[in-house]
Length: 206
Image (cartoon, rainbow, N blue to C red):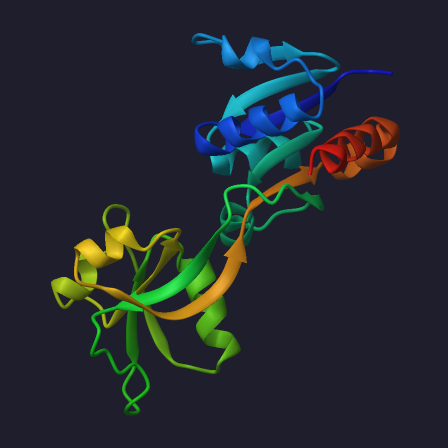
């Protein structure tokens, strides 16, 4: 059986997956003690550490057979691959947030929404047939309503503490997100057994 090359999102997703696969009986020591290495062998798998959007790029182009990435990145970037498994780790939600007295739908004016995830925001409001002006923000999106740049924001919320500290509240919960396994369309055919073995391993740990 050939090695499965997996692009793994660096940071929090990486830590969660290391714990999960360790629980499944895989020796993840090489990843725990990786130093500055970006390509690491662990058991029958070769892990490539990458930023979330790059995980999708590597899987789509076939340089990695599979990828482990947050559903937020999948929803924002899209792509041509199979989404085969929910790891149920890193669970949080996309939410609409704003100042406590925000009335988004009180009149017929265009709503202004600031977000690091313009595609997700656009999709959500399009589904509700609402006219919105989406403003892309790269940094602290919480500033937008405070500076009156937008009526509200669309962001990922886990505990809500950052919102609270800046005087904002969740106005609407949009989509639940967590870490997912994606597989290259060709690898799904050529390495079906390896993919099945990995999913079985994860399901055991879950």
